[in-house]
Length: 377
Image 1: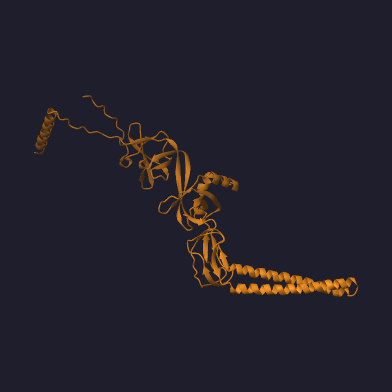
Image 2: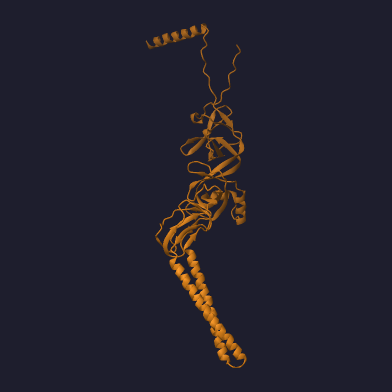
């Protein structure tokens, strides 16, 4: 019964096909589309290496008082741009002023004593020459005069010290820059060493980051001198700083230092890149990314779409002479442009590989088909 039904359906389908053909209607033929492929070649490419970084002013200075006392005035505000020598804080000057006045009075007394000792010494010297007084009296008067001179010198030092202490009561900016956080208020009692604020010298900013030891060793041979490393840094290209929001800072920077000590925990070296900050747009503490464009010469670059990730392997489908695909395992490194990868092993120059649609290819599948020659009507 089933065989009879199958036969009937076959007759019906055949009849329908014959009828369509006889009516001049073309039945569409199955077309097989080739996959997109490329031939592997070597080329030069720039790879942007990215490092997390934190900005710091090259001349950040912690402001602390040199004398103790009550804070009488805060002359600046947080985030304010200040010039070198501009007044920041004023500490109660009264005690320092009294100490200066006392020191000046002691100096006047010492000067008077010195003058009297000088007169006595000169008088005894004159009398000694006339043999009226003894050598003993002359020597005593000379010693008294020298002691008076020493007392004057000591009194002058006390005056100078008092002036310095009085000057310490007015705290000025040691560098031009931005005022950081001010954790004190007017009227607070401050002491030596207490942090009042930080002046961030922001004319130039350092971006501090870490680089892998392997990266340096790849370019600088082991046993290289400090001069070799300096030459290596001088030959590095300019770097850019990218904010956390993705904004690229318009001024380029230069890598200026590489520490000579490897962090045992991370296996990395500390590095700094210096950026000019003429408009004051960069601030200490800002985090972002330092981008170093490194040139890779004579490497095999393929699209990311050509690489199929299978667990811990990376596969690329190579097209054989019979137009079928075979999977080969490759190792790659990222180019950082989001589109390509560098193949370090698994492929050779001249290999043809599948680029678009590689995820859908199966081992041994035909991936290239010759175009059919269309007959002229």
